[in-house]
Image (cartoon, rainbow, N blue to C red):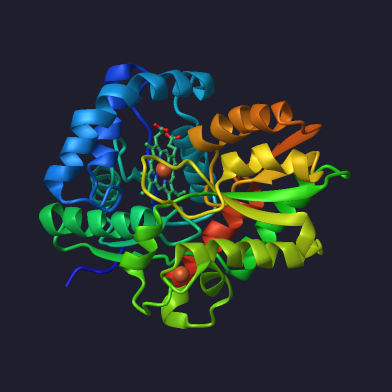
Length: 345
Ligand SMILES: C=CC1=C(C)c2cc3[nH]c(cc4nc(cc5[nH]c(cc1n2)c(C)c5CCC(=O)O)C(CCC(=O)O)=C4C)c(C)c3C=C
Ligand SMILES: [Fe+2]
Ligand SMILES: [Fe+2]
């Protein structure tokens, strides 16, 4: 038998190769044809994605990507690489990255680890909260790649860390560092998902009761797979850690696509309505994302700010994601270490 050699694979969502319409189209094709993202039967998904979305969206998305692109590439990839380097400096085993969509893919990342002699992988999906369109599709893809190309590899998955003590502490510290002294509300804007996705993964069959059930549920079967529950849980733990009153904190969901009902309240509608309710000084944080990306830098920090100020808001502060913050990298090291002892340098 081979002696075990461990390695870490950090997995994030992925970005297009470049901001060209062709590359954005190729990326969106792979992303939106994933049945865990658009969960229609293949024929209906293909009609919607290839027949409609890919004829309209790539041009608009490419323009949006151009506004956030850095000389080194997509912010999401560049930041994930920085996290990789910093984590590699702290552990004695190889660390690689893999993206669910586009390159460097999960297959590329696993191959790099295998080339370094790794036969036991700790795969870390960089999503604090579980969703069918994030954690679940990453695991499914990694298992597919493992079975096809690396049948002798063992993969351990780091579970969603939405309520883990060290993560909550780190997120709270980062918010505290960037939060202005004077603000009326701290808005937690999470990436949305179609409401139907919650029902699909809910083994307890209780999500359907209503939103408040999801938020306050103590049912472990429900809570481990309910994205809505986990977003509210992260928020509540951070709110308490920061000592903020309930009325100064709100949860919303951003980035919806298509005509289906997504989980509410929607970020864009809320940004328009808050000034009318006397909320003039707003701070916004996006904890579904560990690294800044198109959805935070363009949709929230630029578009969201504009919407809020045009609706009568006075100030809008976007609080950055954890990115390659040292305390966050240390949290990643600790959680990876929980899967395997003695990896610290
Ligand atoms: C953080 C968790 C994410 C969930 C949940 C999620 C669900 C989800 N997303 C789409 C559609 C799009 N998302 C897009 C970008 C995007 N999404 C996430 C994360 C989650 N998505 C990230 C980190 C990014 C940014 C990627 C980057 O390169 O910076 C896009 C592409 C951009 C655009 O055209 O607007 C789409 C489309 C669906 C349909 C969905 C749930 C079903
Ligand atoms: Fe998304
Ligand atoms: Fe739920």
